[in-house]
Image (cartoon, rainbow, N blue to C red; front, side, top):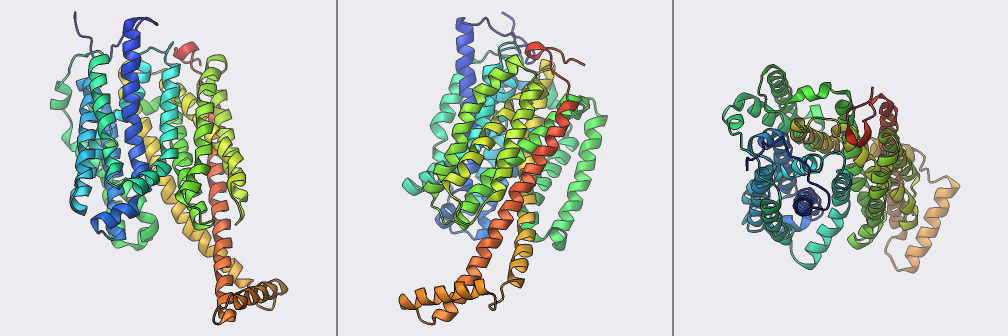
Length: 526
């Protein structure tokens, strides 16, 4: 029997043995995708433990995350070309095996340099699992029967970042930081083996690799790598105030110019950017960027507030964050069912609105905000994000021809990741600005002649004196300064959540510009 090319996969008959085998293979791909996304968050939550384990400074240890993110954002766009050359089965197997081996090497790292090198391998080699799984949801099952797979991909892509910090904290507290990487080994081996057995073979087209544009590839790697690094380092380095950062901004601009020129001028570019001429794909990619901003931004700000302002433990923070994860589990199937019955653009607008409401709700926090104050905003935001992800992928990718899916899913994934990176950099920059602003505003009004301030100091002095504290007057002033910083922090977090909600509100206005896909992912209606 002839082996079909990579772009020509015929959907199996539902209920047949072939269909069951494909479902098992796709589930294994989802496991690999889950590991690749989760690895970012579980490591981020345990940086301090790793730092102590390998005796690195705070500045040096940051490269454990930065190296992985840079390598991943370079590897993801390449997945489109490699998918066409190798087929999704071979590409996923190579990616899963490489990711698993790199994870084991990370656990065996003997110093900072070795760990950074292994993290680069892990991020670059494992990057293809994410877009390949997204493409498989469409191409393996056909547009008429891919909704369940699309919902699964959306739930994994949104759920993994939400539970990652909690899981990472639990692993390091109960085992050791080495297990942050060792947990990938068994699932990775099983995923690679299952895909090798259950996913159909496709014909290789190695000429695409032999004729690869090396200049375009180098320019893309330099552009995306420096872009990711700039937005990682920019907020804490002062952007243009740092000469080294200014130099790399110039390098990023030049490399980007070369990459875009060759992408649009060559017949066999590393990444096909002409797909952005499709209106649905262009706006859908912007939606993916917004979703990435909301997803990673909320996962970043919520634990930061609960830890810095409330002093919550990792377990308490995890309990609050789990509400959003549960909302995603409920919202995913609802989104899939709604897309079958109503215009998916309406479902996308509903999801953006719910996420916007949840983020806006979080902009009214106080210094006493706890589980009850975060519960409903988490529910709205969690359900909203998954109800954004599923219809966004359906509208963006569902009407594209099969041969463009691998490239398209890679670009959408890059947009979502860069949305998170740029969004976090923006939030950190705004955090510094608002913190200074509110501390100055509150500090200018902290006159000890005010009755409220006098009452606070008097009560604090009496309490401290009763506790036997030496110099209760001075300690009371210190407590007043701490209270000022806490209130300034609360106001800052409220500003940041409001900024995120405004971004989602702006995205809602662009939804009507998208074309409505035809029934079951057929041609778009004009």
